[in-house]
Length: 294
Ligand code: NAD
Image (cartoon, rainbow, N blue to C red; front, side):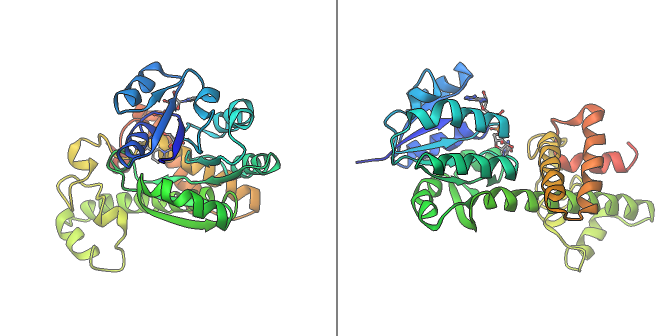
C-alpha cells in the first residue's frame, strides 16, 4: 500500500514538492494557511485538510515546508506532536536556524518520534521539476526512512550527520554562495572599468583559478555564460531576500559557535543594502548593478 504523507506549507516550494510526491505514487494530505495553496494541491490530487492536525492524522510521514523557525516550532508543538501516529516519520524541509531545528528534533524524540531536518538546495524550478538536493540531519535510521520520500522530490539526498546538521550544511553552502557571488560581481565590475570585455574575461577566468559556480553556472553579466536570471532582467532565480535570510542564519550560527566569518558578514551587509534599495524580490546576481554604481 502506498504511504500517506501529510504536507504542511504548500507555497512556492512546497506546492511543487507535494505534486512530485503525488506523481511518485504517494498519497498526500495537504494543509496551508492559504486556501489558494491548498486548492492548487487538491487539483494535483492531494486531499484537502482544514488544519495541520487534520492533515497529520493517520499519515505515515509529515513533511513541512514553512517560512522560518518560529513557524516550524509552533506547527510541530501545537499540531503535529499531538495528532501524528506514534510511528510517523517527521521531516522538516524548511530553511531554519540550527538551534531551532535541534530543539524541535529533541522535542520530537522526547515524544518518541523520529525526525530529520532536510533543507533543500535548488529553487522553485527544482522543486517543480523534482530535482532538489536534500541535506539531511538525523540518525542513520531516520535518514534511511526519509530517503525514499525525499528521493521522490529530488535528485540528491545526502546524510549530513545528526540533528540540525542538514541546516548547518545548508547555511554553510549558502554563505559560500553569497560570498562568491559578491566576489564575482565586484570582479566583473572592476574588469570592465579596467577595459576588459566581460566575455573575454569570462573566457579566461572560467578556465582559470578564479572560476566558481557563481561565474560559470550563474554569471551575473547578461549575455555571458549559460542562460541565467541576468539574461531575464534578474527575474526568477534565487531572490535577494532569501539570500539575505540565509546569510542572517549563517551569521547567527557562526556567532553561536564563535566562528569567524568576515566574508559571510560582508556579504550579509551588502545583500541588506541591496534589499534596502527595494530589490528583495529580484535575483541575487543583481548585486553586480549595485557594485557598478547603477
Ligand atoms: P512561501 O512563503 O512561498 O511558502 C510558505 C508557505 O507556508 C505559505 O504558503 C504559507 O501560507 C505557509 N504557512 C506559513 N505558516 C503556516 C502555518 N502555520 N501552517 C501552515 N502553512 C503555513 O515560501 P517558499 O519560497 O516556499 O519557502 C519555503 C521554505 O523553503 C523557506 O524556509 C525557504 O527559506 C526555503 N527555500 C526556499 C527556496 C526558494 O527559492 N523559494 C529555495 C530553497 C529553500
